[in-house]
Length: 497
Ligand code: NAD
Image (cartoon, rainbow, N blue to C red; front, side, top):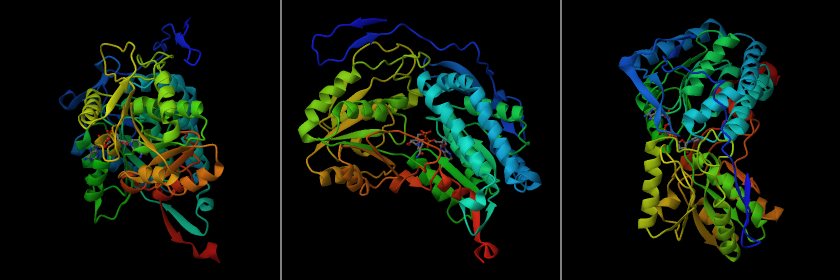
């Protein structure tokens, strides 16, 4: 490691780090996978195969079987049988034991899951090791604790499970989204058919191996891999009692239409366009560090990313200068390198989408700043990017880019900041940076979003509910609120008396 001296005392120190790759020796995965139905893997079917690439290199990582309508039907039937035969009626404490086992096993195999998540999704190993996998285990621990205490979660109510839950997840936090879905569903006595995103099925498939190892009864969790079409079969299957979807607002709307008029529950966790508001009384160095976490964490593939910087006019030039200096120190590259700050974009498709949005921004008059430095020549990479000279109506300010791209706007008054923050179709998360507690309460109470962070960003905890307003979706995941979408509640006359 060597230190580059800088000309100015205000410039950050630039370190050059030796390559420090996480070993993949301890990790095993198959080259070809079938589906996981009724406690067993089906044979890989080459006639229904699709490829999953390593985004860091663009090379083939493994192949999966695309579940067709018959496969989805078999998975739903297996889930129904497991629900009726035992899972829906066993004691809550027994369900809790299984969930604790899953949580502990995830902790034990954390290193293996972290490497697989980075290989498959492109995220930096530091993030999968320190955030994705520990948090996934934490959600299983948390909901294991509720499994035998549902009566306390819903006092004076008779609590019963829904039955079979269809669950569909995106590619940005594959194992973590799986945990957000499966843990509360199982804790409440439901069984599950889950579809991971087509570019990131690996940790979900490994998770099914883990379920076999801990002896989860057959059929309680079933996994169907495949593209959107497979998801549609699941949504349209008349054997499901609930659909839990996390993904884009466009697909969320389609799903809402498909289930209209059917007697099934739904939760939709959709897109976002979070504002990151810096007031002039904020600690600017900390606020700039917070931006890195808000928009460059997980390459900006974060539904609640702080992708719109709103900075008070008096400090705007200083914040942008500090931010550019900080961006120059970010290491973009091999996701498995422990020094990497920004890994690979998940797919060629997503890379094209990000580039298209930046091009639109430039056509509409934005100025673009990207940090220099080497990025790998193969694989899917995008430089952390700032777009200045944008306006509230700019496409890049209104639409979700889902990449490492931050738009910058200024404001003069508190009310202007609130108005600009609220002026998008989304309402998932926002962040406020200020030294004044009273301002946090005043602004926070007027921001129309499910989450408002103050003087921090992108902090998650299983005890805390998460979800959106407006086109960011409906329903909450996490916390005691995350149990409600998985149960029927009836007035319990005895308890009330
Ligand atoms: P996507 O909507 O394209 O896909 C999500 C999942 O839905 C995938 O598994 C996909 O195969 C499946 N799918 C696609 N079309 C379908 C259809 N017609 N019927 C049923 N299933 C279908 O989203 P994505 O690109 O995978 O994920 C990125 C999006 O997810 C972003 O908009 C992001 O903001 C959102 N997201 C939201 C949250 C949240 O908690 N609100 C969390 C993570 C990601």
